[in-house]
Image 1 (cartoon, helix red, strand yellow):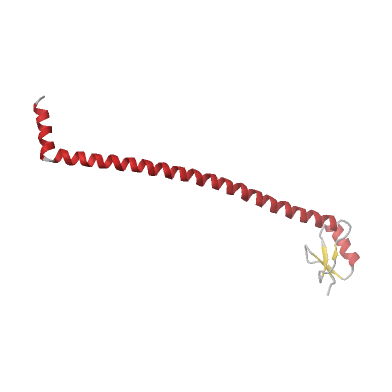
Image 2: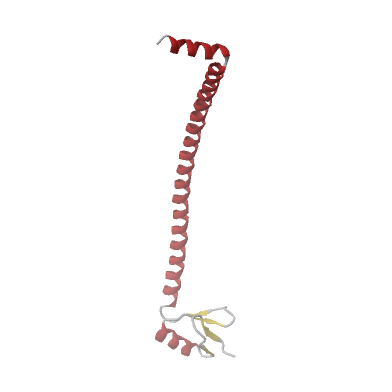
Amino acid sequence: MAGYQCGSCSYGSDDLDELQQHSRETGHVGTRKNDAEPAEGKFGKARAAAKAGAKVLAVAAVVGFSAWKYKALQSMAAGLVVQLAESATENAALKSENEHLKSENDYLRSATGAGKTLNGFRGL
């Protein structure tokens, strides 16, 4: 059983120097089988630090995008609330006008309203 294993492929070796040679040739990062001590080679620590930095940068980008998206959604929600208030006001005005037209229609259908309308046409 190999004491060292490549983290990127299936290469394994009991010799640290062989794993470091594999790491230099392929750019892969090797580890111990029990993960107690990484066998990283000459540039392994820098590569591991770069990977960690890239992960932090990716998380920061996701958080920043989420915050921007949240602000955009808040703005959109505020606009919808304003539209809802305007619609409610317009709805109330139309309801009032509808009630006025209904009462006018009822009057014109009544005997008094119909009589006045006919008398108005006779005078022409």
